[in-house]
Length: 98
Image 1 (cartoon, rainbow, N blue to C red):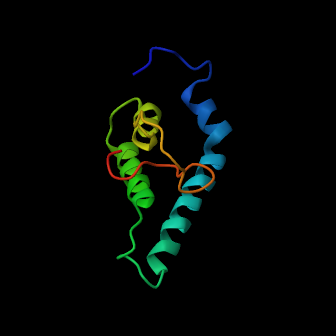
Image 2 (tube, one colour; image 1 turned 45 degrees about the vertical axis):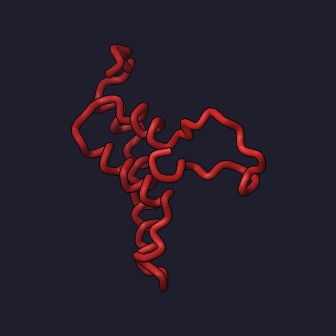
Image 3 (cartoon, rainbow, N blue to C red; image 1 turned 90 degrees about the horizontal axis):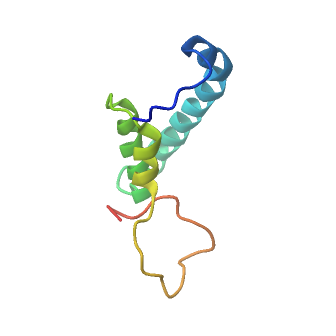
């Protein structure tokens, strides 16, 4: 875990940012609910959704450096360039363990 300290105390951080992050959690819950209600659920579990669920588990595991560990889980670790991208833009998470 980083030794850097935040200039705010915990109560100030909660006061400043709780509502913003409450909305993000609700947004994720709604996203997962929509997938659950899809006609082909759960058979169509996409690797990106699986990665997101793994990241949620990292949030709850009691360990530090959550942001770093989640960023690493969502990062493509391949070093070889691809001949042709499958789409314009990023996929957001590597397939399987990348």
